[in-house]
Image 1 (tube, helix red, strand yellow):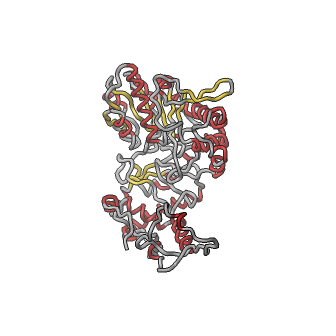
Image 2 (cartoon, one colour):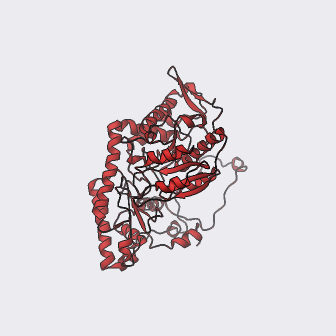
Image 3 (tube, one colour):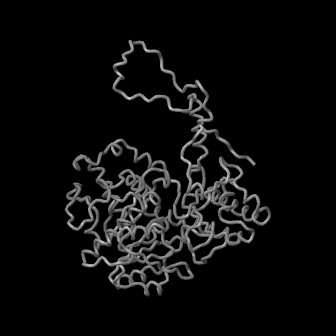
Length: 482
């Protein structure tokens, strides 16, 4: 066992150590200068450490953190992919960083042109008619999409009562519908893992405002009957919301707008080049068809004669959903990503994401159970069913992967796959890195049969041993006491 132990900064402390010593004053001391300033007295047990100890302590901690710059990060649904650093550099240009939202549009034409250009590119990629960039991230994008649907139906005279959500949808979908005042009904999946159209027909009526469909769904399966789904919903006057968080499997290949989708949100911080997870703000722009366009948040960018302005004159708008018009620098990165790849590159990124996922699926389908046999796109969902025979669960598999220097996949989601191991390699991983993950998973399967105790007691090489996750959630200890 090689348990790594980084001492707490409090444990490094020794009485009398100093991180910095000020030189003696070479002018007369004037206490009156600080009389009106509150001065903090010594904090009990405050660590006393040297500068080099501080630097080394926090450097070691930073190196212990697993990140996408270290290796494969195969979280299903989360799309933890490496993003080109050049896009970060572009977003750091001084004129972008210092452009305040209160600037007169006359002196920030370039910034407005970027947002206008990105809107044009996203409408082209998705087949929608217009976008708003106000939503901060995917969950708020879902909420805004449902707010638009409610506003549209209220404008027709009846907001309706229910929203239908497949059991294979993203977990935040029901919350977004509920916040907008709707009751949620679940639609079953069929044997292929896609929407059961008979169950949809049974539940679809004129009390239903919309169906919220994730495509590809959380099993990584493309909803191949989505056009028929849209026809069923539209026949009763409902609208189709598509969760576009998995757009990295479709971009450049097919367009949701051509499938009958009325409103979609995208995750710029997943599909279009902003680090996902601890990497700063996200962005969840929402695209709509003509029927929902009058209700988009304001202000909207208006172009006339090569001049860009912010237009608030939309009487049916749902108003602002965030101060100003969204996370601008995230939009800059997204446009840099799209322009650098071009149409062929965008398509190739999707194809590579699908190829990588299917390479993993094919390589591990003998060792790990697949509940649904339908073809998958950018991610696949294994389960721990085969390992359960040896009393090994997905949590044991995940902890052992830490020892093997590979980040675990998403676990226990979607809920319709018991013991799920949801794997998404994205388009950025090489065959060598995919093989590293595959070999680790095969080794764990072998250990589950020959030496299950090594899995039950994992991780062995980490900063902490296996935690009591239930206790950590219910009784968190957020401060150190001597």
